[in-house]
Amino acid sequence: MIRTDPGGAFSLIEGALRKESVSAPWLLAVSVGHCSVRLSPEECRNVLYGPGRDEGLRATIWRQVVAEARQEPAGGVGTGRLLVVWLTIPGLYRNLRRILRQSRVERADLEAEAVLAVLGALDSAHPESPDLGGHMIKEAVNRMWSYADRVRREVPVVDVAGFAEARRATALRAVPQQLTDEWELHLTPPPRPDGLAATLRFTDSRTRREGERIGALAHCAGLPDLVFRARRHKDSKLIGTLALSPMGVRR
Image (cartoon, rainbow, N blue to C red; front, side, top):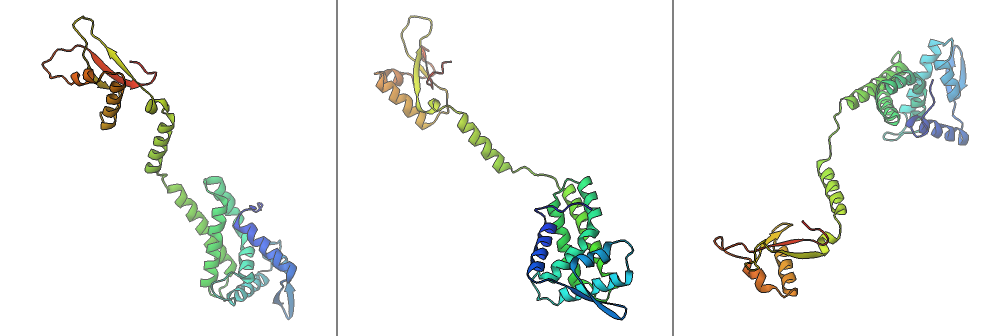
């Protein structure tokens, strides 16, 4: 037997039953021969899983706990239903251990699947079935294996939109602030003494905003006519180049 997971469903059920037993001790009345005995939850477990099991008493305990659990109001999980699940747990450990060893699944998820299967089997099983406990344990084991197989066949899918947004945010943080706030204007005359003119070369996209920036820079430098002349026709002679680049970045 393996220990219960402190954050799993099995541990929560055991904690709830222990809390109930402190405030109102629960005893199961079963008939043994011509006598009636009252068994605590721990004694019921010992009868069901201990050495030298009495098959007749074992079947009686399962029928009794299932009958009492099904008398509880529908839609709730009372002490009787919790007890039924708790009594099935030892019968699940072997397969639980195998699944955890063979598959990369969370134990808490397996325990939750097992609990749901036991509760479903409790509601659907016939109270006079010869092996109520075995039926509920089998349903829980099958559901755990089915869940592990489903997880194993799942293919992880990348959140494309989230991935693109994360890359975009990273790229924006990597851009120095000066590239958008500070700019320099450089004039490069050709290697011949025939005057100074310029063509415009933008190191960023050719947008209206960049045009306004270079116009403002030219105006501050007292060179509006020079920038205007840069818009030469294709037949005119090249007399220089004008490049706009971020502050501190020269090409």
